Image (cartoon, rainbow, N blue to C red; front, side, top):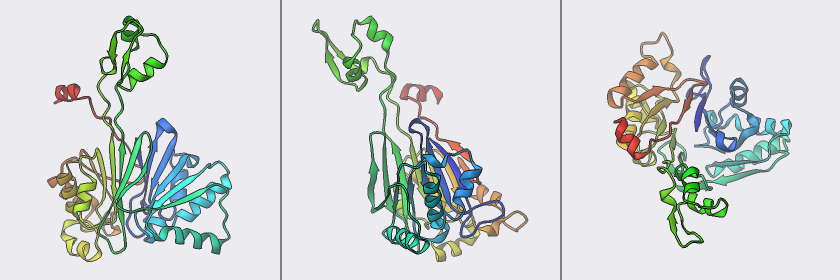
Length: 319
């Protein structure tokens, strides 16, 4: 899992920050999942190392323009490029109407299948490797946060040990890799767990924006390896945050602390904290770290590799 920030400003773009979009790259399956698609996202993709042809799923948090204005342009460009097989979209109920209107009035035709999935709290997508779920957040319009969970995988299969035990290669290896117990022709029973290393714990990625502090954000982020959370305002502007139903730096840190996440990355910053102003983004970082030290500030084109969790025995040694 590798995260790339394609836009980290709130409301409007600035000279150095585009509006909201985050790419989650899944190299093991040559796929990219986008979270939000603000205006100019396709330009940001072109400036990055990401391949537009690998985009397979786009998750929209809510229908405000700074999170969706880039969607029609990106989808149209994917069609003109002719190298996209299919894209699945996930988002609020109005997303399908928005796309239908955009296609109608711009006379756009997608040359590949585009499927819109209206989300509601719970699991929105699942396959053999991942589960994606969402929860409602607290904003001025219906908004959702997303959680991507990588399923646990069996540890490395010890082929040398299997050979020493006289286990013939073939279908039996597959059963043992899955942790099953097999019976050999000579009557011996072999447990798969005896030939596999520690289970690889799946990683957890959570994306929360736009929202004021709420319990659903905490539950969504529970035990996440990385939480991306909006921090539109500084702590001293908390009243603005409550009025506009956005988060402060301290709210984001409180969510991370309460949820027990491993890493917090703040994004969706108000342009009012640009360099040279009375309060700058480094001040927001300091506020958040006072509550939750493992906090980073996102910036456009920041990449972050979500680390794998150590097996239990190695984790104890590391401590």
